[in-house]
Image (cartoon, rainbow, N blue to C red; front, side):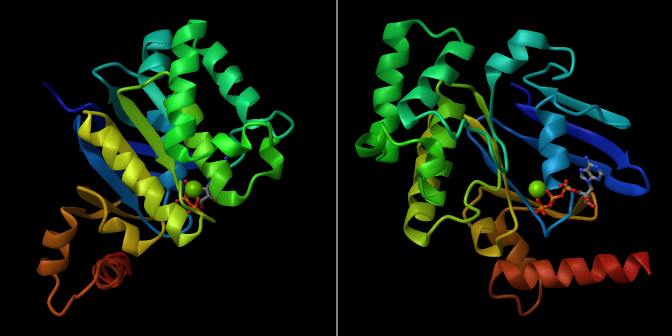
Length: 247
Ligand SMILES: Nc1ncnc2c1ncn2[C@@H]1O[C@H](COP(=O)(O)OP(=O)(O)OP(=O)(O)O)[C@@H](O)[C@H]1O
Ligand SMILES: [Mg+2]
């Protein structure tokens, strides 16, 4: 079976800003792939292009072999997306948000109820089902957004900075949740600016100014940089090298 997600030589500009400059990577089923990079590296632009929400100027994306811009319903059903911010209805309660997303995907009532209960249990949001999304803490909001993205059990999941603003305990829980789904064969692409989170991914693409400046398993990347002890050292070394090349 080919890779679940293929991003090939993707470019996209916004006016004079080159948000993506020949970005390429692939993610397989059962793989947790991290797009790691600083603010403005192009992570959100890449995720929007994979989700079919943005047309690239050049290059190619396929999700399970299909162009997300042309795949219509089939692609939408195979993709789960957790955007960087504001993906829920603040005025709706936890339960109502789950119902809304279940209806978008036309889940039969019984299927929806069983999945929503399971997701509420594993995200530990059960006690808060009647709370409005706008009144949730940052971590709870992210967990609800994740639950809503997972309701239709997509084989491909895209998460844009899912742990931004989340406390360390919830952050660990969120990663443990992701491992569960990946173990079941899901392909997950997760963006993060946090270097410590790079080490939690199976493979990492280190993104800088719209393209990858390094890619590999976190430990291999650390070993390849002399004197590096943590991923942060890899980041500083690779980004420094890339800036020198550009100068
Ligand atoms: N709709 C847009 N219009 C104009 N410029 C944009 C737009 N979207 C992104 N950009 C620019 O493209 C570049 C990449 O932005 P992007 O949001 O993809 O970065 P990011 O890696 O997600 O950053 P962050 O970690 O801050 O979320 C930035 O310079 C940004 O200002
Ligand atoms: Mg972003």
